[in-house]
Image 1 (spheres, rainbow, N blue to C red):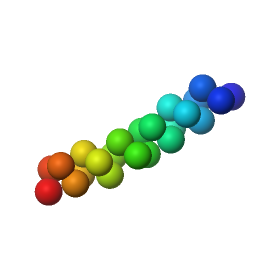
Image 2: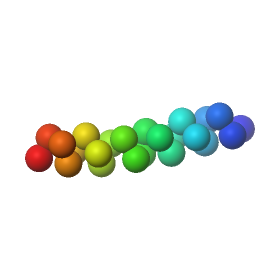
Image 3: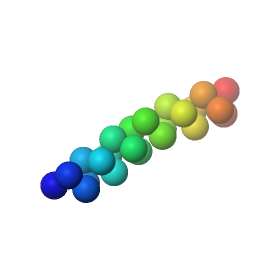
Image 4: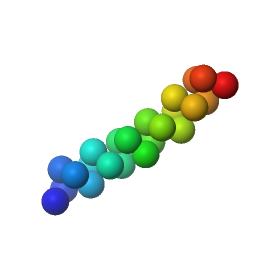
Length: 23
């Protein structure tokens, strides 16, 4: 259960990072 949570958290933090880079 800790694995999926970590992966989800990583994706959530990765999305805004890519958006900022795209901007």
